[in-house]
Image 1 (cartoon, rainbow, N blue to C red):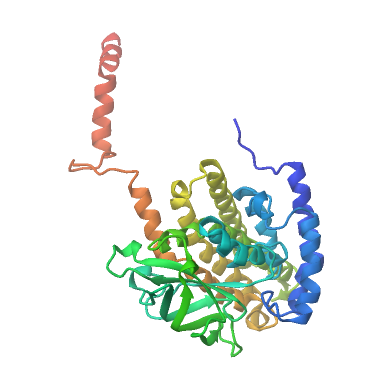
Image 2: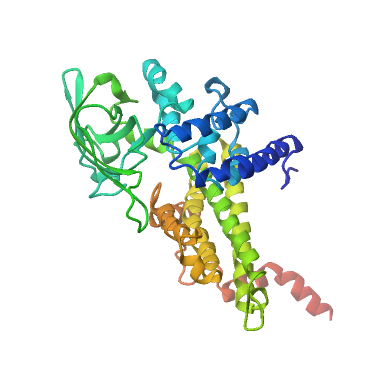
Length: 431
């Protein structure tokens, strides 16, 4: 019987090293660097590559990839435990070679790309010599591919792309755009799209503006991208024509688990800050920690974090066990649906406990509250995932044609009497 909640000592040693390395070497970077994706920043290029080399020496680089691509081929449980540490810093994933969207884009190029595509794009992505963006959602239709209007038309030996894409994350830093467009408008809904590899310097590609998350006025990194008569060679098609939806799904399953564990890292940090605060501040003659409503916030937060963490790890375990994302689709969608609520709840409580300091830009809570809504939308909105969960669950049940439920007590009572009638009658007669 295998039923264990302990990490094997050898891997725990790796996690312990990661924990110390992230704390001492990576977390401080947020105060001296901008985006970890900005390869044009001299300070970034001075500070990040040496840390990446140290990770490679420890054989912890790009562990989601197989040995043939320079990784360790770790399963989802190990990756989840690693991402629980990496989530503490926005610079940690790129130091360990597992940053989104590059990790997902590299995965689909490795899976569907031609030898030429792999030589041109895959190795630079894996070595963090190139940044990519996933250009899928559209201004009018969000992430529903059935209503996409961006088109690619074959003209001789070239595809001509026209349309607009919205919220293409990291487009401002990317040199490669992975673009999902309609190539076969008359085909069934999920066979209309194809995936293309488009260098950002291709004529006709224009970033209309860079959109930020939240209320600040600074430029963000989520591109509003316009494609006007963008011509790419036929061999820039990734996968088969009409296979865009299948290619897109390939990159999502494991990524959602990684997002969840990184979210746990963030909420644990907020929880630690909350606990420190209530043991440091007095009001009305006593510590905040002695207030019952504050104690309720602490208890609720701890329970939510622990429940969610175990749920995510169990889902990761199922992925490793079945090696088929379709068999864990319900669990992955449930993780995705629960994640933003845990994120919002814990950060909201931490914000309230810190008072006016909590809503200021001198703490991370207000940004975290906004980001929880971002996470509720990224990789599919919460509502869609809840629908998926419900549909998957209901397939395991059946209705009844009876007037009353199968668990109706009078019906069960009658069945019990009939089952044991002979024994009961014998006992009554004997007495």
